[in-house]
Length: 278
Ligand code: HH2
Image 1 (tube, rainbow, N blue to C red):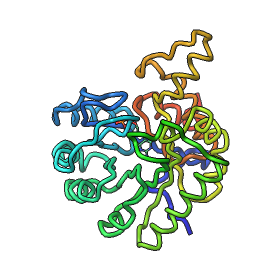
Image 2 (cartoon, rainbow, N blue to C red; image 1 turned 30 degrees about the vertical axis):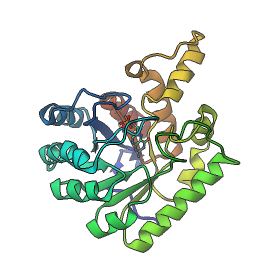
Image 3 (cartoon, protein in one colour; image 1 turned 60 degrees about the vertical axis):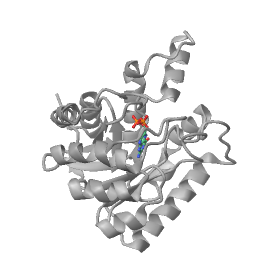
Image 4 (spheres, rainbow, N blue to C red; image 1 turned 180 degrees about the vertical axis):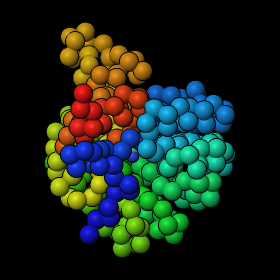
């Protein structure tokens, strides 16, 4: 039996609102907010701002996983994330965005209660630490994943992989498991759109689904196509597509949306749920 998602928010008509995971990247090179929150005080202030804007969870990351990103040492990743997690813990639920068990250990010691794992391999660490675990699908490694991603049936393959990882996590003792199709992680624009179109197939597994399309390059392509300019807008000018895809995902039954633009995403979540009635 899939684990229940954490703290669902129920609306006046009994509908369940999708949770909003706000992103705080303590990195010099993240594709969207790289270099803006390298100072822990700035990162904590940004996290608090996102909580005020309606974030239910703050996802703190110390390593960019954008295509071609430079790897960071474990020590450096720990040095980046732990003061920020400690500064935010107690005010909001914290997840740590990491592929490394040692970083997860340090992050949980600092106050994180969820491991957001783009490698989908840290289930035993999450079980040992007694925290929630996100299994995200990625084909390949960040350095080369966009070189030539290939699938027979992308929806079936991602679904099968995530269900197997979720079952392994429960067998290892993880109490709360989320699955995430990993938009942009070893996928072409067409793969991403197929996964989005058939998100209901992931939701139908019964595992709570996390979706992160926010500001990604596929959305830049869609916006360029939609206004006929053929020019992809800059990352911080992709709000319409981020909200459109987040709203679609919520309507398909996604339980949590990972977003940079938290105020607008949280408002969209309340609208979808029917909390706003006038
Ligand atoms: N996307 C990114 C990072 N972590 N985690 C999950 N579960 N799902 C995602 O789609 C996802 C993720 C990439 O976005 P960002 O953190 O803004 O960029 P970067 O990897 O460059 O730090």
